[in-house]
Length: 222
Image 1 (cartoon, rainbow, N blue to C red):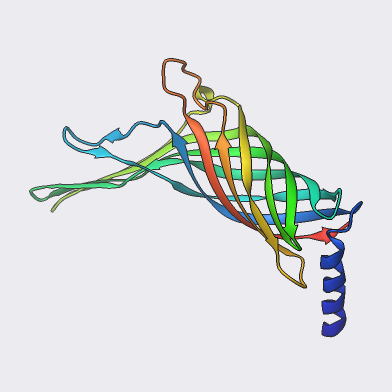
Image 2 (image 1 turned 60 degrees about the horizontal axis):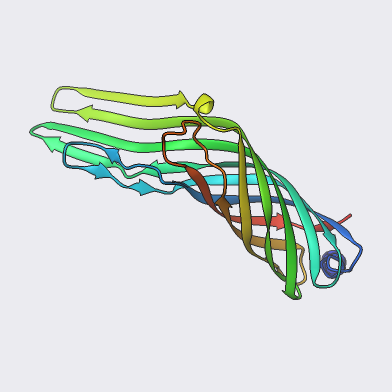
């Protein structure tokens, strides 16, 4: 049974790149993201907290049509959790300690990427295209703690800022993918360069999404 399953997987993997074939690829992955032009946080009169990427994830599916041995077109439907963050901060004054952590903007998108894949050799492709993202949620979060010898105060903020954000995000996905030999597992690495601004307030700087994604998918022929 194991040998038969391996043979089927091998045939399926080789068939992915035949011209005129369709394939489907459920995928799951992680991401690091940040917003360009975001200001630093003024933690005190002398301390500013630098921006930092935030960890997120992606889950979805991609359909691919093989035009030729070297060229294919793919379209996906995903949910992507991304955003932007700032460094943690800690300050001590006598017996009192102030901590500010997990300061971030968290953004959820339904994304529809459309990319062209150019296969440089069997299983390895470079890709580029356009992606449309539709905002589902936007929250500003932080955790603040004050602790001392006789007191401990925790403040957790989770505030929706969706009304302050543009609902449509357009970006350019670019990257590479590789299908593991003999099995239909695809490793995909992309950078999504945001083109449209996130913030509605025109007097502010343009805050744009930047996302690095690494996904693993299972590709099978339809």
